[in-house]
Length: 337
Image (cartoon, rainbow, N blue to C red; front, top):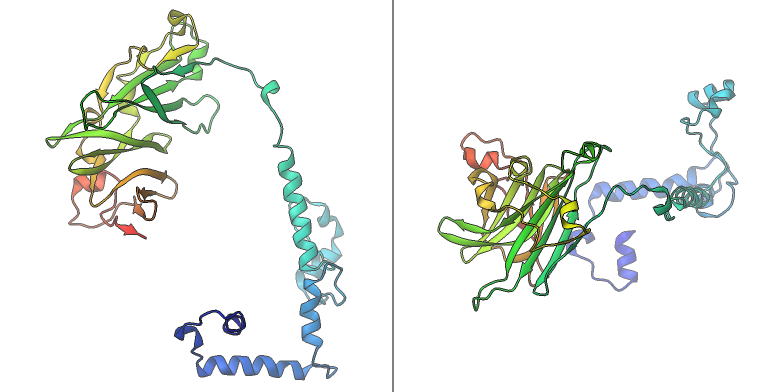
């Protein structure tokens, strides 16, 4: 049927689709013969029963479920139908009616979310991040918080023009930690920060390109040099030791300047060792997306015509390098289209 639809639409039909085995022909023949075996000798009986499901009206010939054990059990115990978790089959609705009912239920469920909850929220504090005239904020991202009292992490990637000609812009990642538990303890700062830059690795000068949360405790960072790109899986826990407290009372304002926070600045390679990174061969990208639950990283090439997907699942092979295995980056990476 699909092949015939393509032919009627003047579409090109591949040779593979045009092929039909003897078994396929027998199936089609058996299907056509079934129409002539109706009890009332009406060749359109089966078609009518199928067609009624495609109309926006109740079924003219509902399915006979009298011999169905589950249907009989529910009929003997009608009180079970009152249980919310019990899904009762609508005997008289067509597929069109069932779809419209499902659509209405979904719209109704999400209608309550389309409202402004600002008035129902209590502000615990805020800080507006600003840069100087020569800086550009390229990305801001906040971690997900499964629990109310969990720490909240955020990072800002910003760049400043390089004074050296033909050199890429200098980029920094300002990483912040907000701990709601310290809001009660006035002796502890609930806002901390750390500044990360590129650096020298294997005699190559690397610059930060892009970053994103891989999981709530790991950041994926893309760095580049004349030698190519590297992907770094940066754990958050080692960074907490180097974070500097940000005392908002000292600033006397909620406006914090990127270049005036006095955060400790470290090279990303001083935290991310060889086990946390890998060289990416033949990659020319400045955009990527990560998914920790799916364990994949996807890169969009600069020509915007090619995507490369990396599988982050570890390969269980005896001869695999331990350093690579611990990085969480599979050796089977290069899947592009």
